View 1 (spheres, one colour):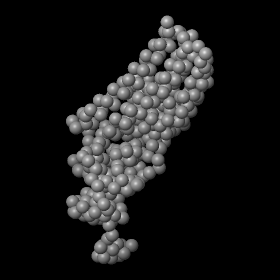
View 2 (cartoon, rainbow, N blue to C red):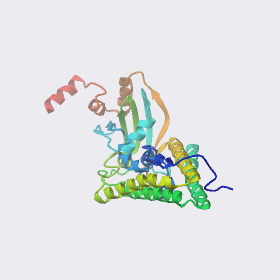
View 3 (cartoon, one colour):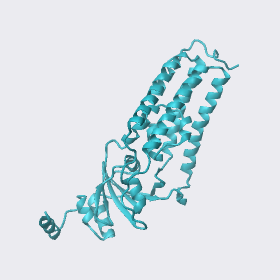
Length: 320
């Protein structure tokens, strides 16, 4: 019979330390979904205390972008969008992405279903482990799960408060947008869609700066995670094993879920990759092709992709 004393001569008192691992799977999931759902509370993976670091998922990169329709050059400062573009971009290739409403029919592909299966498996795993702990009457281990779930709840609530849609510039209803984005390592991304949709995922802030209340809440959640690691030493050997399996398997399932999520969802919009990346032997060839297609070169000059002609250079000197 499966009981607390089923495993003997084995010590797993430090299994709770797994929850303290600084994994970025939860932060990555937050960036891919643009926020956090209440179901996330029951997905207990290591790195709960790192969820607020989702705003650093872009690794400090703010790529320059040029609007091929207006010539305006600016930087994209939405960290989640930048991180997604980094994941789909390839060195020496032009990758096309599109921004649309989330109900776009082309998004109903197999990868989303597989990702949903992995996510559902993580939720079911938590429920099964909790049921087993109740069956063996290991209340300490069940308390650890409760503390981790509470910490998860606190972080989810804070993320929801921070990810409310704010300033996105003036509305341009019906206007089509076309951006060229230059990422590090010579990765080039072309983003198309309605201007208002593009602004929603590129302009303004994604996660607002945490206020005093949010700061206290995040600190409380972090202390709960560390406290659960301390209390895990009181669990039985069987309970410790179940906790370790829960955390390790949840981390793997969430990582797989992230890898099969090939879209970015944010503020009611979806960003997704279209077609195959196109290889160019020189960046100049890519720029010249897009200049010819767009019918204007001011954006390319502003981004430093092509040199201005003598007449354009003369005009720039006069303006200066």
